[in-house]
Length: 357
Length: 271
Image (cartoon, each protein chain N blue to C red):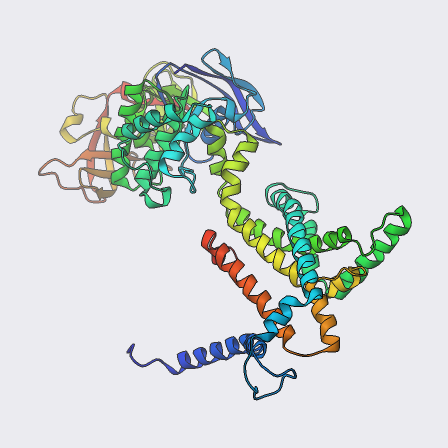
């Protein structure tokens, strides 16, 4: 196991930049998740670490070893593919032994390591089966065992759970996480599934359009999103567009004045609010930001009620619509469109991001 | 809908299929039948049955020589065809080659070109080569093998590209990730995956070479004839069932080769 450091990593295809100046340091034994929408450059970054894509610039260091120019077969990164990529003509044991064989480990020493790897993924006794005789979840575990058996410096997981059904995904998620902790594996996982990322990671890297938007723990990303994209991508946010008219004074497009944290630049801005930080009805009493909002639409979602409201009156140019989430407590009826409800939030609950034009 | 009474359409379809199959098999049936006739002149009904034509065919020296030559040429051409065709297929499928589709068409060309045309062209080419270099190309076994290689290549390119197109390349990446270099990856992962295509290509290439008549007619030298030519020459003088017996032996040999091959690779999955 080793630490991994990615510095100023960049990949361009002609005029198209798919990864731009990515810097990530991963500690020994850390589980890092690259998260972002499809096309954000997360898979390209992972494939550059594995050696399948040559970076246009930047460097990748595993432990003390610079691997930037090494071919994939000299990197010692165990990669688990989204499609598992098991060798169809080899048995489970032969698949798992392949990496050991490539390392010239004598057959007598391979067997116990194969058995150990299969035991770790709970597939002991499946040695002689062929991949086509296994279920998706079992194939996934063989792929994991194959990567683990060669004792890689880093473990790379490329959307490893996306081909599994929802129930199995939850199980395997926990298994991979436990195994990673137990073995102290430095791990990078790529996913577009937010819940998967949040439950598995020690730290997350949010990427968009080839760039790192923010690196941090779950709490840091949720409480202090670095920009509007992260605020909308990690968890949900209600957004209000408007302007900072004075320090600590936000005015919506519809003309509603809202108090916010003082340390913000004057100019066009977006105010982001976590739906659960918005108090409704009597709970809003005494809050500085307290408004009468008109209900536009209400949805019953089981555990929560989702209510779309507008802050400004029907005559305003912009109605300042925003989304609330209210816990579905006993006795609460969902409000009807046209009704007025009182909402409010603390000044420091709102996060302000500069906005184009 | 009842399942007990087949519809009129179904009956018509089966009848058409049966008729087509009969049309294909009829020559085969007649050749087989004829091989066992006792009389020398093939006429119906047979006067009786005999196995003597099989021993006649097996003891006919031109047939034996032809068979051995066809076998040698077929095997050599098939090996050479694979040696050229497999790398060509890999290049065509995996790399963006300038004029790739054109090369692909060119490599398949010998399959669609009439044998007479191909034979004439190669004949002229060999004459010119011999004049230019002074090497004994004309009528040589090497010249014959080179020409037969040409008719094997299209089969290799067609069947191997087909298996490569459906091949999941991430398993090659997996092998490299596990420490295998490009050559090991090819030998341990790529080759086993396209093996059915290669075996089928070898089989069909060999059969095409073995049965080739038109092209070979131009290229064989004195005292060096392939089996189809030996049969043709025999037919110029006699039409007794020896030829039918020799053909039947050939058909059986090829059928056995196909059945044996099919045990190891499912040909139906490739062709």
